[in-house]
Length: 569
Image (cartoon, rainbow, N blue to C red; front, side, top):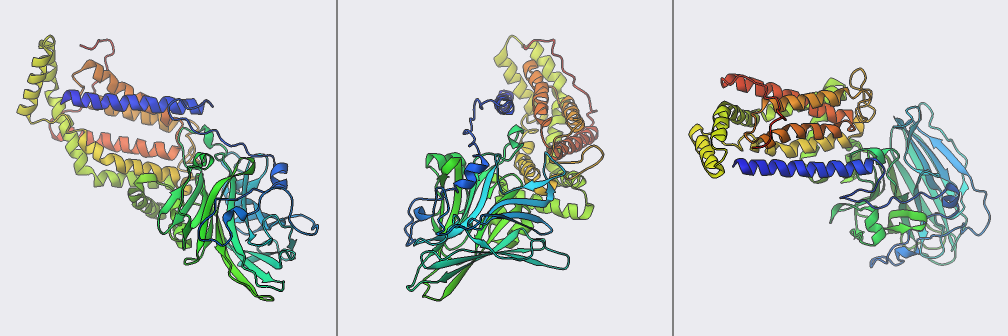
């Protein structure tokens, strides 16, 4: 049994070293040794991107009259007459948006309530078209030479800022007649809202019936958000598609590049999205509207995800409208859940979502009571320790028994050091007589691991933690501790835990038990302060519980300090 335990620990230790080395390679700007990531796409220069809007063509789908490959691409405007091109900026209390009159495209979006991580005096930029980032929200018509996102449009006059006492702001673009159709695009912003209404009014100005289709797409370069490349943890960046049939499907840029990306092509509900750490964008249509989803790599190392929906037949002189919404904002679960079914899944907890969602709910409730995210993290860990109290008590009781019989084990090992088979038999006999299970201290802890991993992802993914202060020097729980005080305390608490545990009989195993906390602590020096606070709180509470249980069992707490001078026997 002792050999099994030793093997498990060695496997964990070896795998941890592999992960640590791999992340260290990435941290230093080198290619990952064991888990290489695809080369990041380089964002094109702003002049190139503006002159050549992205092609969003995709493979033909079976349910559309006009296939998605007809979504336009290439350089230049398709408008029949020259129209002055201009940028139009409008703002509300939470958004500052810049639109391009070519196609009425959203080309820049600032989230005014969220400070940029690198420049605290500036807001987060989500959509952008510059030398550093290309991220656009586009829409248009296909099916007969109709206005697209490349068509030069006229901007109608109107207010450009949401004033006090106003709840709504509109921006209206009108295209020239093309293919017997005029497109009127109306963007509607509301106070406090990150979802933007987009009404597409299609007017038949010709002499024959038309049957256009509307496409909605998000175009983005393949780079991670600025600053995230240097962190020692990784979050998903890329497109996602949600349908009622296959639910949430996220797609890696590398899979689009290689042609391996696969999503549900046709659905009557759901959304398409672009996801990154803390923030997301998504095109939303009302449930029940048929749409075809698409994604692919496009010009200039850009990637597109979108959907096409039929407008329907329009007789001469008639018009039809299709209402959509473009979400561009933070991943706040309550807001996302209210906007569309499944939209909260853009806040990605991975395979532990079933555990992470209730943990986030509890953390949010604690914050509503305490008003501080740092103390809410402490309180949540305390509640988890209470919930697992008896399971932990069993583990620490097993450790206390092991510590009580440890002198007998050490004496026996010294006496039978030249007879390994007899030593193993004698050790098992002692365990049976004393009713000690060597694995009894590990199993209860292993059972809790998924819960604490889920809590890790809750803290890593929650935008509410971003720029949230705790106390004193911790002004941002999503950033690393600037003074490294929390990582140092966590390292000391981990070493104290190791000192309180029974010393393994095998000297080599004992050395490894002291090395492991030091290895893990290296990573925590680069982790967000909120995550380190969570681990530190858990360590302190575990030490307190272990101390109490040892004392109650008549096994006085002792510090088993390492002795690296001895060789393994």
